[in-house]
Image (cartoon, rainbow, N blue to C red):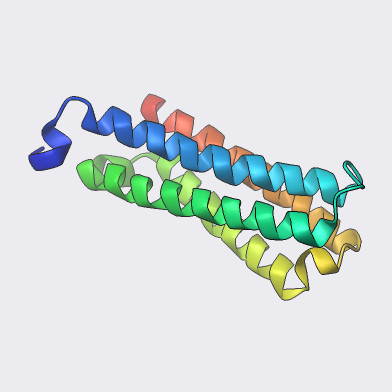
Length: 138
């Protein structure tokens, strides 16, 4: 590695920023899901959704940017890693699920399908998180 990534603290700093992005993303999505399932019912759902989804998107942006930077340090090894390819597949499925959720009306349509999509979202993101940890061991 050369340049910025050659510094001994560069990759660990990227990992910390990546984890921060994931925490912002997943923490806000789970909080919103809890509200959608009735917890914190004194909080207006639409207002909470705007706040939570805005922070979740910022977290996704941070995780995506740092993930791409980490990928750039070892693309061949990561592309050959089954945990990495599964993580990328799960990310794609999570994105498709989010797009379908919002296309149906988002939190404005909290029917059984929307609630199932919310649960699926958490399951997918937790699986993405698990695959991210397994990358180092594959």
